[in-house]
Image 1: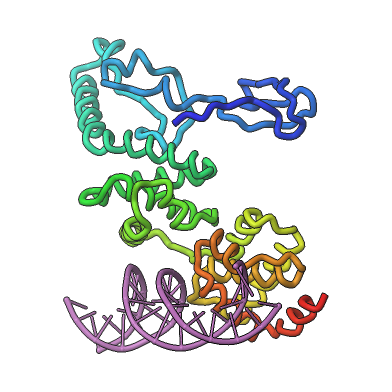
Image 2 (image 1 turned 90 degrees about the horizontal axis):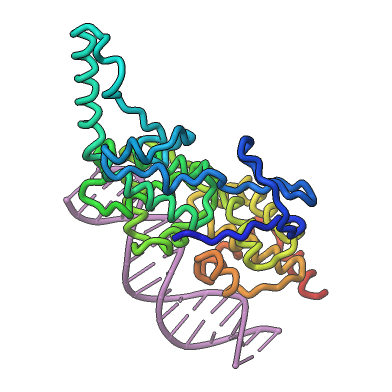
Length: 306
DNA sequence: AAGACGAAAGTGGTTGA
DNA sequence: TCAACAACTTTCGTCTT
């Protein structure tokens, strides 16, 4: 899945761009806006089909990355060159190293190649930043090395790794959204996610509702004031410890709903529920709690009268 | 007629014995 | 390993605007 990219400045829409290969930047000639584009194409040229072809297809050096099966470093113990100048014991060492190298690069690595390609595809589909993708790649690698992929589908582990990476970086992606990108259901992903987290000892911080507010709000076309209002509500609610144990998306949704009411930007529970991926009932429950515990009833009434 | 509200029953996951 | 439990969902009927 390769997106066709039309290079255009997001600031001034000018198509006159200047790319600086050394710096790895693309700059708009008109307004100077720095457009980050993938100037280095990781996907094609560095691919190896067999160890023989590898040497001819490979170029010098792509940056180190966990999203390639060999982390982007394709160093080989060489065959040509100064071997004859070595003394026998050195030479034996070189042979030993070569042997090990081919051994290492067969079983797990092959799986990694496919998995990481898949991972990148999904990441770009979900608009996940490259740091998080790297993280996901690393998680997958560790999982694969521990043999955790055995017995479950590769996709589910990839999905789990992505989800875990997102959680770690506080990038709000719900399980729903990730499962949409895969031919897998939510349950499956959740299960493998928990499994690999436990096995790898990854500390999972519960996501905070704030992480979701921004994104839900933009899907609902809410004003910035409403968003900050929602943030405020969540903060108060968190301080009063009425949010613990509750699903963060539900809280985010309810806070947005309340904030929308207060600022006269009325949204229906249905609308909010849909973008947040929860039901109206959940919103109602959280909403009720928020009103009670934060004493917002009066404010709501006031807003209604206007 | 649409949206808000609430009750009741069901689901999947966590926890503690 | 199993049962109790909390959060959340689904469904459906009623009230409000």
